[in-house]
Every structure is written in C-alpha cells, then in structure tokens.
Image (cartoon, rainbow, N blue to C red; front, side, top):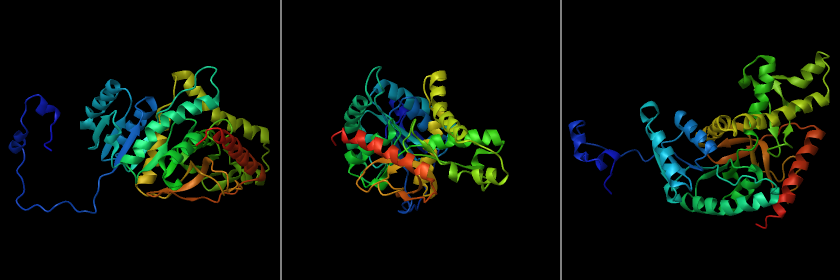
Length: 350
C-alpha cells in the first residue's frame, strides 16, 4: 500500500524525495533481531495525554497509538503531538477510535474509565467500569495477544482484576499502576524533610491503592540506613500516631492536587512512564504495583485479589515478588486490604 502523507494530500508528489536522497545500490534487509517497540494508550484525557507526552519525551516507543471514543478531540491531540516532531525523538504517532490501531502492541496502557457520580455507590461505579472495560480489554487482547496490560484507571486494583479476567492473559502480564505513585509521594515527603535526593530514599506503600494503603515503615532506609532502627539506636523518640499522620499525608496529597487543579496528571504520567521503561527495557527494577497477590504475605491461595506489592518487573511483566520484611501490624493491614477487595470482587459476577 502506497504511503499517503499530509503533504501529498496537499498536492506535493511523493517522487519529490528523489531530489533530496539518493538510494544505495546494494541494500541488505533490516536485521530480523531488531524490532520496533509499540505502546498503546487508551483514553486521551488529562492522565492519558500526560502519559503519552512523557513516553514521547523519554523516547520509550517507536510507535505510539492513542485510542479514545471522541474522534475530534483525539485527532486534535494526535496533531498537537505530531507538530512537536522537530523537538522529540522520532516516534510514529497514530490515533483512532478503532482498536485495530493498537495491533501488535508491546504494552497497552488503560486510562479510560467512568468517574463516580454524586451519591453513586462504589459497587455501582464498578459495574459501570466493568461494562466499559469489556469494550476496551477484549479488543486490546485480540489485536495484541502477546502484549503487557498496564491498568491506570481507578479503582485500579479491582479494575486490574477485571482486566485480567477479561483478557485471558496470564497474571504476570496484567499489572496495575497501584501504589507506585503513592510510594513516590512517600519518598518525596521523607526526602524533603531530611534534605536528601528522593532517589536515595527506599520506601514503599503497598496494599490497596487509596485510603487503606499500608506504609512499610519497617523497611524504609535513607542512603542504606534503616530509618526506624537508626532512630532507636540514637534514642530519638517517635510515636505510632506520628507515623500514621505521615501515611495519611501521603494519601491526602493526591486529594490536595485534585482540589487545587481539578485532577492529577503529571506525576502519574512520570510514574507510568517509569513502569513502561522497567517493563519494556527489561530492567528488573523493583516497583510496588498491583498484581495477583494470592499466596504472598499470608493472603490465602483462594483469594484472587490484585493489590500492590514490591515486584521485580521486566519484559515478561511481573517476574517475582520481593520478600520484604513486614511487621505483624503491617501484615494484618495488608490482609485487611485483601479482604476488602475480595468482598467487592465477589459482587461483580465475573
């Protein structure tokens, strides 16, 4: 099929390229070991476009496909990104309301979903999102049967479970963004107080993404120094109530952004691009992401719940789960999160 570019539609012939370039005489085909990386983003709202923009600036994909139900807005977003081509790494940007545009994706990122209506129950919201995900996940899985699925839409843990059920993919290839961003907020607060770089702070939030997330205080370190044991060693007093207030401040920081600007976008954009890099470049980095947690940290084998645990990520998706030390209280909170999610899932009927 002959390529038709924007300029050819305006009357500029394709043969004009001969005036600029001379072909080589003996050309071998491209090496079969080299391939193009394709990422698809479903949902061109504030979150989806922040993710797309960050993926482009960090040169994570050779092809970026955007899907949304609003054709005019979608085309506008595509053109706006394409017009920045002179300032970005070379990435082919596609957009369509048809999921065929996602065919052959290495990674499919889902940001679309229903927002809660005033007075609507959480279960009613989940039922609406279940209907939306049937229209998203099934065609994604059909067009890219070997892809990794990364769910960003909220409530992310239950929607990741839904995506796993609808896709038929093995659980290691279905991941939720989970508490990866929560953990970044946690690290920022600690780093800001201690006046160090956030990259030198090792700290995880795990469990259900949201108000019941669990801060793993027992495993926090700064520059390799365990925080709580260091405080004990230097006889610096701290109270459990203080630690809980810090955890709540991490959770509420997202609500503050929403209150001030109406939505969150940039931080989740960087968080998801961070996950995409670890997955597609097979970096084996540890991230707290939503995964099938049954059998880990005392969660029963018959509870098919997705919640965030520190996991090693690579080209195969979730490669393993880290054996982080949890106190008895942290373990109890994690299991309570699992119980809450399990009860909600039982009402979905899938």
